[in-house]
Image (tube, rainbow, N blue to C red; front, top):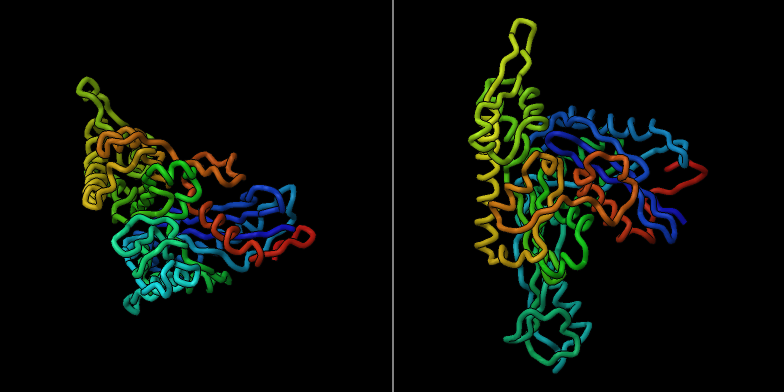
Length: 399
């Protein structure tokens, strides 16, 4: 038996579509993927439906016209949506019930879970996920499994992740115009964490930073569950804008400087004379150079602002000291030179790049960490819909 799944990520700087295949007894594998520069999207939110739809059409065309050895053709009808952006929020919520008998039963547990699903959101909000964390029974907290325990008042601590339904519907509209149906919307940071974290890291404590173009999402795990999450409205595109403003370059030149020349760590004083060339933006403009130290300073200041915000939030939630397995970086921003060293300096924990470890098919990708979120979305689809295939395979044709 073969199950086929697709996932779509619409980001500020790039959009990605990936298709994964799950054969019986084998590991989930990405069999096709495509990425293009985003259009009509800023800060992970759609500003132009038509342009965003054209981006999706371009991705579908690239997937369908990319033959491989195992599949002759492909026709994608639906995909899971990976979302981020500052409109995504994560709020704690505790549901409680009165235990019917003297000991907690499965029925009590199911009832308190239903109570947690009753959290009332404003009408413009849409639930993305409800994370069950720990139970409480009377005065006792931190219970992982309350079945059979004695007590009267059962509580369940949860984390509700939700987004702006209007922004999510904009993505659905853009996809529909490209003849693509969008299934469950999924939070980028938790998807990335599922793709890159080991069970040991989830249990001992780890922070996943998903560094995107328009924003940075994070997810904190310990004791095996998602403890906290948020989205900060600072991403790689803000760094590029800072470079363009500081050195009077075009955005394209700033992007090139960020990716190929800049460092998150300021060059030592001995290197202050180093210069970075900038080609003229038109035939009438001469090439020039800028100080490498000045370039690094611009990048460093913006990133320090980002990590200062994250540090403050983690300290406020009493989570920073729980990251015994360190910090894992995903997203396109992970490729920035020196960013791992800066994060180590700012947050005080070891840092590694998070390449997806629970899915195959990424060996030909230069920066697989940038595919962490979409890999996690495909894993979610396989985990929750294995008995209900999303796409079916017949004689080399995906339908």
